[in-house]
Length: 448
Image (tube, rainbow, N blue to C red; front, side, top):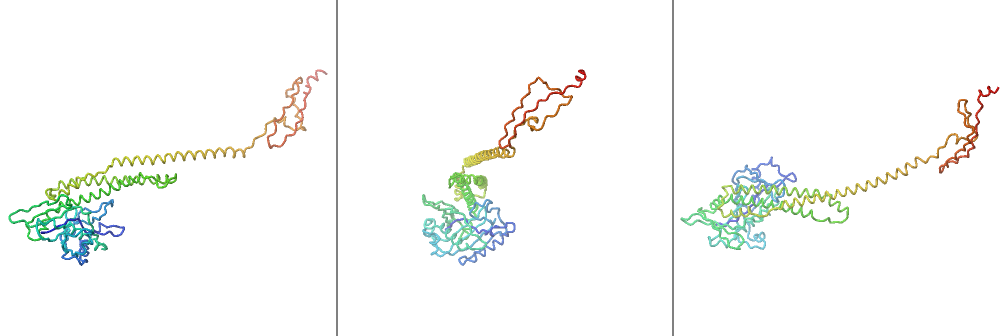
């Protein structure tokens, strides 16, 4: 009987520093040669062979937003990597921790199948007994041993990057026995209630272990590849949801320090943080659309056998009820943006009022004191006759000038205005002389 553990491991390309991978210049067959060289460099690897199309890639690799923890480039369209791996029993405890190894063997047959949307790894070995002995073995632990051994040994490889999708999403211990004579192949779910991992038992008419695995892979590869693709999308969706929720909760945190300057610094960097959460929310929505489209394609794919014992794992991923309250978070972000704008509007109003008051006070002081020093007060204005010096007599009237009225009383000169403060004293004026008109010539002639 063959005990089979199922996982998702592959051999990706390590990025060339910060420049990443030049996909346009990438040669798929060269990476296959690098995989072969990396595995051949391990003394524990034997019987290595790589079959399939070494130049054909699928369009599935890492997403552009870099929110995934794994590297998915390159993904081959049809390639199978076979090898045997020797892991001493004394090393099983090292890789399994406190769990006891139920593999009971040191040599594992490993087959990594690149076909479908995601690669699937099958780790199998021969165990005694039949259907009644399936609970004595745990091939799922063999997947853990193989994965951790390869991860440790290939960690320092300059080109090949060993990758896995997990943690352990397919919790199944599978077994393949021979079909009894005259009977047809069948699949049984022998899982115990509360037993943890599922237990599946399959029968095959093939006579050799290699042929039995060939039939098993051909029958279940598409279902398992679709399941791991949904697991990948689920992990990506969880990472995006975590980025949105963590960013939103971080926005609600009060400033670490108090004070007006700390408050200003808090609101000043708020716009970038809100934009980052908005961007994460957009990526989450786009991923949800891609996830829904992939789920619909899997349901419509005739190669994905819905009668397979592994199909309930797909249904479990499709029916994952975890959803993001995106509308509530969007309203929260809009509210926080309005608060940020209100803070700066109030600060601008206060600043403009203070600046206006300071400028007004400064301008008023300048007009009051500055212009007053440049234009001193002028003394009172008096007539030229009144202000004339006493030694200067008034000019005689011309014959054509009208004669003053002799009967009119002489008018007393008006007192001068007091001198302005700081001005030179004005000397007292002499009284103006009283002028009598000269006799007209016609009157003299008549008297003679």
